[in-house]
Image (cartoon, rainbow, N blue to C red; front, side, top):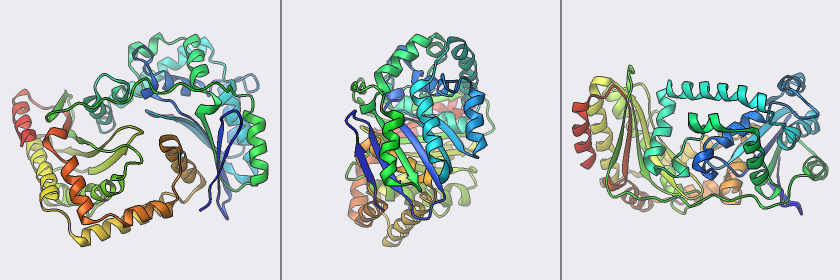
Length: 425
C-alpha cells in the first residue's frame, strides 16, 4: 500500500490513499482537538461544536439542506469527537468525490453556530448523556477513565457535564473554533478511487482559506500517579453487574505496544481466548467478557470488561484476577503466540476492506503519532514479538499497584471491603 502525503504552505496536511478497484471514495477531515484539550469550564465544547457543524452554513442554511444533498447521492456521512481528535466525513460513489469534498469542507469552515440552534441542540446532548448513563456497558468506559486519570482533561468525559454544556454560548464556540480549527491542526484524508493530480488542487480550492495560525496544544501532559489498587463503586439497579479492570500501559507508538496487543488477544479478544473460555464457557458467569488496549498520544491502558451475574460478582472478580496472575506468572505457550499473531493479521485485513476503513485507520495514526505505518509494517512488528517480550510486558503492566476496577451495578456496601481485599491480592 502506498500513501501520498502533502503539506500545503498553510500547514494543512493531505493524506491520499489510492485503493485499486474501489468504487467508493471517503473524505475525512480531522482536527487535532477533543476533550483532552479542554479547560474544566469548557468540558464538552469539542463535542457540542461537532454537533453544531451540521446546523447550517450560508450556502446550505439548514440541517435539511445539508442532509438532502448527501442523501440524494446515497452518501454515508457523520462526525465524531474523541479525547484527542474530532472528525467529519462523507462516503459515496467515487464519481461524487468533488461534491462530498465541497459539502464537508463547507460545514467544516463555514458553520454558523446560531444561538437558537445551539440552545435546541443542548437539549439533544443532554438526552445523549441520559442515554449513556442508561447504558452501563458503555458508561463504564467513562467511569474507568475517570478512575484512571482523575480530575484532569484525560479523565473528563468527552460529552462533558450538564452544567458546562448548558453554559456554552455561540461566542464561546466561535472562540474555540478559531483557536483549534486551523490549517496546521487539520488533516484531510481521501481514500478510495480518485485522480492524484486533481486531488491536491481540489483540496487547496476548498480549504485554502482556512486560518494559518498555529492550533492550540493540549493544556498539560497526562499526569499518572498510582501506588496501589483503586476501585470505583457506582450503585445502579441493573440486572447484571458491569466490571472494567484497567492497568496503566503504553501510549501510541511505544515499542512494547505490539507485544501488549498480542498479550491482549491471548487474554480476551476472541471466543477462544483465555477469559472467554474460563469466565463465560466454563463458569457461565456472564454473556460478555473481553479485553482491549487503548493507546492515546501520551498514555494508555490494558482493560478487561465484563457483565456478570449480580449474585456471583465476587466469584467473577476472583476468577478474572486469577487468570491475569496466571498469564503473568506462568506465561503463554508458543501455540498461543502463533495463533494470536495469525488472528492479528486476519483482523487487520478484515478491518481494511472499505475506503472509510482506510480513512479512519490512517487518520488515527497520523493524528496520534505523526506518521502512518502500512499494514505490512505493523505485521512485521507483531511477527517479531517473542515469548520473552510478552513476559516482560505482562510483568510490567499487570501489577496490583497498577490495577483499577470500575463497577456499575447493585453492589451492596457489605461487598465493598471484600472486593478491595481481592484487589490487594
